[in-house]
Image (cartoon, rainbow over all chains, first blue to last red; front, side, top):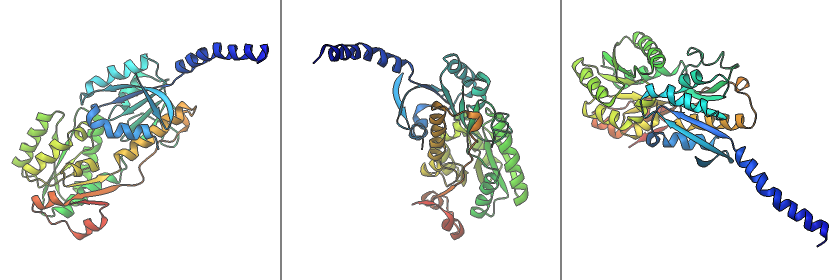
Length: 52
Length: 272
């Protein structure tokens, strides 16, 4: 491994957690509002998450 | 927050359930608005409170008549931050009365049960069913219930008034009470129709309407597309195109009803 390759590898290792954190922060959030309760609403919710 | 996926996309879902208490919806919607979520899926009777809570966060709803309710400018071009999927069409309501008239031709009085806690929807249903009843030449008895005990009272009234059949107006709370409604209809020996298949599956006599899962899948589809950059203003409000007719023959037998072949031939599903 050349010095350049080692530096690239280390650099990658340093930036990876940062990139992961940025990705987590950017994870979208859906607000699921419903007039009923989770038990009867379960089937509908499963279909919603399928999103066909 | 639980990790979740929607159409394979990773995301988080913040759940807010009103537990059948529609008066809680405005505060729950305001809370989601304050958290600046990326999309609000306003399902089960929560479209109006969601719209009141935000004019910027995209909203995808399930609902009855979004134009009449002032949620969108038009179905084809919603225009604002709101789009969604309806589970009603104007043709649906007369069908409920027609099906009941075919099943119980001797019924001179038909009862309609609505939930007064969802006023716009209840009023629309009352108007439409009233008109359908007039066309069919039957009297309509309107009953209102928003809690379990009010549902029980409604069935007592319905018997006292000699109603021969019952239309249950589409409502999220009623959907969550499918077992109670089916059991009460059976114990009061009253033939009843409801919009959703789940009612017939729970022992109700008959259901006619779009599919619940089909509707919610479309809402999920729109939510996913909005997360990928689509604008609600450009996504036409979808209307159901297919309706399922489900007949519970076991319940029909218990009620002493003969289901005419014309209905059986049209049924998408017959529960025996």
